[in-house]
View 1 (cartoon, rainbow, N blue to C red):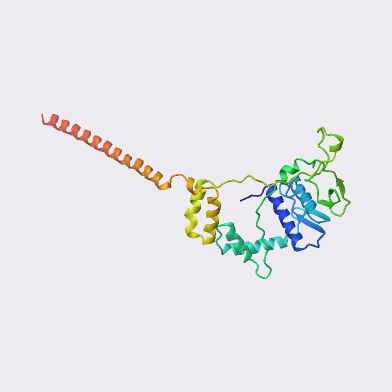
View 2: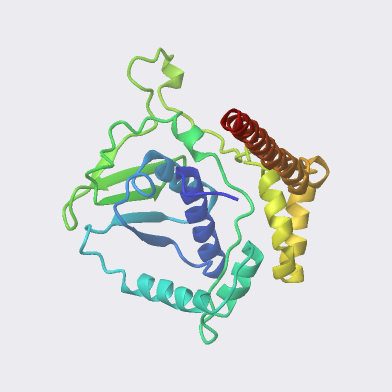
Amino acid sequence: MSGRSGNDIASSVVKILEEVVKIYPSVCDITLWSDSCIPQNKNSVMTCALISFLIRNNIRSLTQKFGEPGHSAVQEVDSIHSQIERKLKVKDVFSPVGLVRVLKQVNVKQPFVIIQMREFMDYKAAAKKLNFSSLPFTKVKLIKYIKSESSVKLQIGMTFGQPVVDVVYDTPVRGCRRTLSEQRLAFPEITAVTTATPLSAEKVRDLKEMFKFMDEVDVSYYQTITASNNFFSSMPPALPQVQHVTRNANSKQPEKASKRKRSCSSGRDETAKKKREEASS
């Protein structure tokens, strides 16, 4: 499972672009509209990912445009989200496999192209080896990527309709000692993200308790991802044992209370007996 980090978003965008190139092989120029969210879309990780995409594919140029906050035309995107939400209201989703089944049923006339992410790339580590300090991500409205024979050239625009400015990103960071042959940085190799967050034993136990409500395909999915880490064989003692100990501990408290009550009542009886004897004498 993954989240919404820079690597996650960048890997997903590149995967979508690769699918577009596969479906439309004659495309040479691509325009990509994004919102102005800096942590997800306007950052060095995304820029590094798009440069890598151009290097590996037969695309002439890619233009990334950022909508004005509050004035972006995203009706079509909102319509897709609305269709998905309406379908999810009447369907139970227990696993990513179940979500894929629901997404395939959202629009039967124009079915969605569903892409399952199998691998996430570490564009963040590669971006640190380049120099994006001269690119003002917080202010740009347009970033254009132009592929040449040896590299990818960057151009930026602060507003739409005005001339773009070239930006150099493959020069050493100021202060680094490099020889003359290293004045241009080679684009770093992109590797896959290898770290994964394992499921805790408590989470696995909760999933097993939900198996009786799931379809067979969902149960098979969770058994596969949990068995790969041997979670079922390394689970802690079951909860009923803990509850049994708790019940034994609690059962002693009424016994102690009854002993205190009997000792108090016997003391009161002896006091009353002495008073009666004194009164009779």
